[in-house]
Image (cartoon, rainbow, N blue to C red):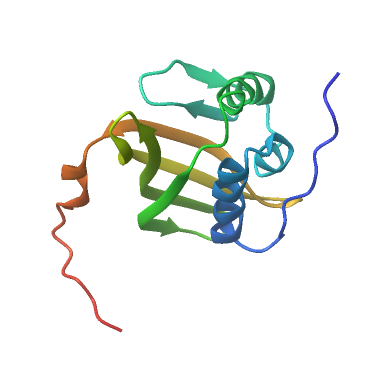
Length: 148
């Protein structure tokens, strides 16, 4: 029997839920991580090279298995956003800190996080990640950089 969801650390915007998601990964806290997800039956998660996971039970089981090896030191960098009043799509480059036989190294994952504004506030409804390399640090874009 699963525990009731713990509310996210914040009921703010999609950026706040994304921060809570990555904090939960870094602390290995399955309850906080699952609280970031929406209640919809069709929430989706795809890990690099993995199957499409549909629904909270499948997503939770996979993260539980990952956390059995420790927390995941994933950091969202180079975030690009497309936002509307009720949806926010974040394309992120994730830097994963890993310990190898040669010492600490970085692995990279390209991920898309989709958030919907629900009655409970913003929630994650899709996380789709693909393997990346340091080469992805170099972005291909026809949009000129903007200085504020």
